[in-house]
Length: 175
Image 1 (cartoon, rainbow, N blue to C red):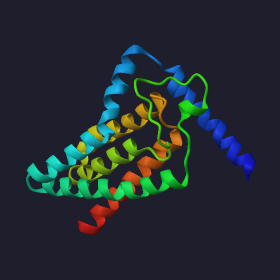
Image 2: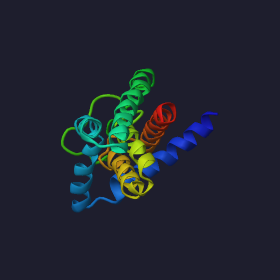
Image 3: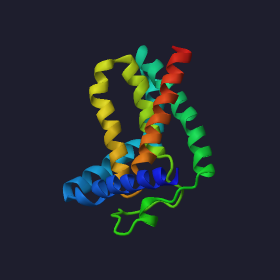
């Protein structure tokens, strides 16, 4: 079993290094340091609340679902971060590129990725075509977390899973 875990960690580290070190470019630095904030608490909460408070019809409902999914999704995130205290990649891997203010809390799972997926999925359920814009945007937020040296790919994958599961659970339960 430890051989499998070691093999998976090696693959993940390679994937991390490719995104964090090999595709570096000044324009990508600006792009990813900007887009990463879409998954941050301020923007995620504000977006969901604005939709819930000011949206009309199905968009208001989607905003309410986004708020509920965002709240629900961060319960397992908080528990997992305490139970499995994984160090952030820039603290473990040499030559990791980091930007401005590196975070000090644990990396698994990615809260930004969880947040963006939890607010985007209820909107996609209302209008499938909006998914053509919002789902790639959510994936870019996840990639930004790796690019900025703050998360491993599995952190973001777990965050996407938790956010998606929370959103779809809320939509299924209330919808």
